Amino acid sequence: MFILLVSLFCIPINTEAETLRDYQNKLKQVQTELANNQAAINKTDSLINSNKAEINNITQEFKNMGIEVRQMQADIITYNLEIKDKSLETKQLFEYLQLANGENAYLEYAFGAETITDFIYRMSVVEQLTEYNEKTIDNLEKLIEKNKQREKDLAVKEKDLQAKQVSLEKRIETLTGQKSSLSDLSMGKKEEVRVQKEYVDYLVKQGCKTNDVIGRDCAVTGTAGIFMRPVVTGYVTSEFGYRWGSFHRALDISNRDPYNTKLYPVANGVISAKYTDPAGALVLVIEHRTINGNYYSSLYAHMSRYAPNLYVGKSVTTSDYIGYIGATGNAQGPHVHMEIAPCRLFNLSDSNCGRWDNYVSFLRRQYDTGRFKGPRDLINFPKLGVTFYNR
Image 1 (cartoon, one colour):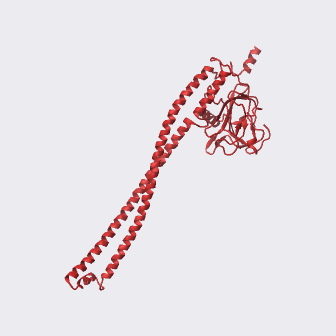
Image 2 (cartoon, one colour):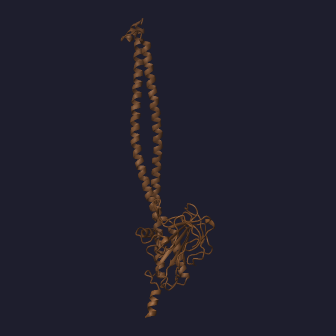
Image 3 (cartoon, helix red, strand yellow):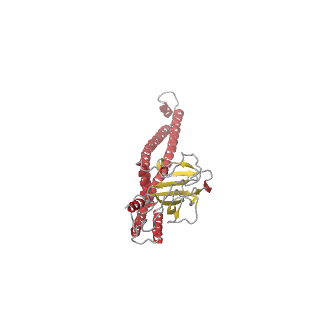
């Protein structure tokens, strides 16, 4: 009875027991999803391009409207000058024609003619020039009013176009977000399938049979041991949790000589993924099993280079270096972005973290509910910016 109780206590019970066949079936499902996912990406790309084309058309319309408004404003200035000139001409004409002080100046000028023919001519000159100037001024004033109304209409149209442009940009932002969730967050879907296939291939190489339970009948992972810091000396540059309006899933760690600083696993484990993310960051993921049967995953990103001979399925200890601190991918300066999660990242048997999207949501949910506060729950680090000198 004593031996039986000790055995039950020491051997962890895997509540998510999976056979090799289960893994292979899930991998096929993921590969099918990838094909469907690519079709969705193509459709989304088409919608994005369509909306962008519409925005380009609106932008061109804005430019044309600006040119039109500037031309109208110039025309208004020109028309006003012409009105001023015509008014001056009429005034000068009247002054020239006025031969005496009084209201009957034009009549005096007309009756000053020596002949009937001259009289008719003088009357005709006054009448035609005055009518021409008045008609020209009237036309110019109508053009000015027409341009002012056109300016108002264009202002209304500009507001409508701006509202439409904002709406289209928001739609593109939404579609781009959908595409991001479909295609790549920190790992592209194709890369994710490749990593998961590598793990299944590793299980086969370990001699796992179709009905073998992984972790019990084959591919048994050693215990994690003590969790340690990933570098001998360094300091925390950014904390786990919310920052800059988003959720940061890691502790960022650097030091004074980062590019020559070796990285080590935070605990004993097995490499479960090795890949380059869409931005070019070198990433390594290690799976750890604690003595009580719980699983953790640690992720190391932005490395400048890997250690030699690293592959999915390789067992590593805390004394095996895995690479160097770097600034590959979207890194603001050299550091290691170190994530730790209480689950099995990229392991298809883990419903929380078997897929990247699920993993991101799970880790954030763990933090929001207070169940997991990041690497500091497992490893002792000094405060932000304070240097440590051992692991």
